[in-house]
Amino acid sequence: MTTPSESPVSKPWFVYLVRAANGSLYCGVSDDPVRRFAKHQSGKGARFFLSSPAMALVYTELCRDKSEALRQERLIKKLRKSAKECLVASYQSD
Image (cartoon, helix red, strand yellow):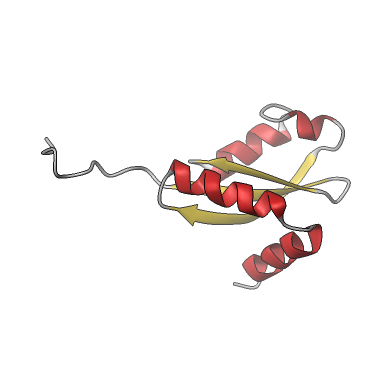
């Protein structure tokens, strides 16, 4: 049992990028990006993929909690595509 001064351990959340068949990048948040990507591939989870199917999970970033993941998602969505491609390239070279 946790006392009021202790905060319960929150599960990790991720911000992720998925490449669509047309080359565009979709940004989202999830506590399990691999499972979420599988949903995108099956045609569920985001209308974005109705016009161009999900092809690859190309970037994931671990966040402290859901609110941090949502903040990071907003920042990434504001980036130009070239900057998003830099994130993908840096992730793939790790």
